[in-house]
Image: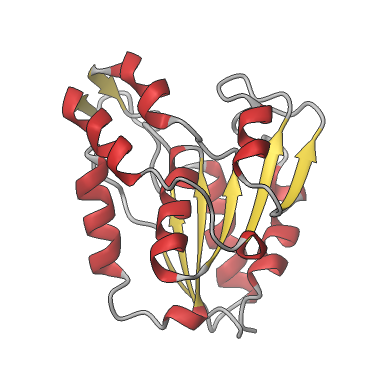
Length: 195
């Protein structure tokens, strides 16, 4: 079933202006005119973020949608895939964000605009716990692009979170997957976008 609706979920402190989100947008516009792409600016509250997403995709055809998520967005994309049954491509996905983000409670700045500030509240850690999926139910629906050189997340934890999924393990690289453009076609091929 070709994908006609694609959701892109950015990471913590990130935005739809991220390099990877922009690359996906440009490629979709250039080669996949039949695909609807939505990359929302996610609020800091995980509960509110997923409420926004579920409201935004409420009318999407479940058999023709897919999600891409980077870092915290990969954790969210996993949750969305488990709720909807859609395919998901994960880019250095966060595996234990409740544990990892607990140290960031307090005021934060946006990566793409340091003038933009938000407050990461203690209750957001509990909201992340509430969104945790114990295990993926259909590994064949998942593709994970994971960098061994990720300076933020442990590649072994990421790989271990998605047993049976299609995993592309990059030697070196970094958390941002700086050479993402080289792997974008493989990601989009897995998602089976309508042409």
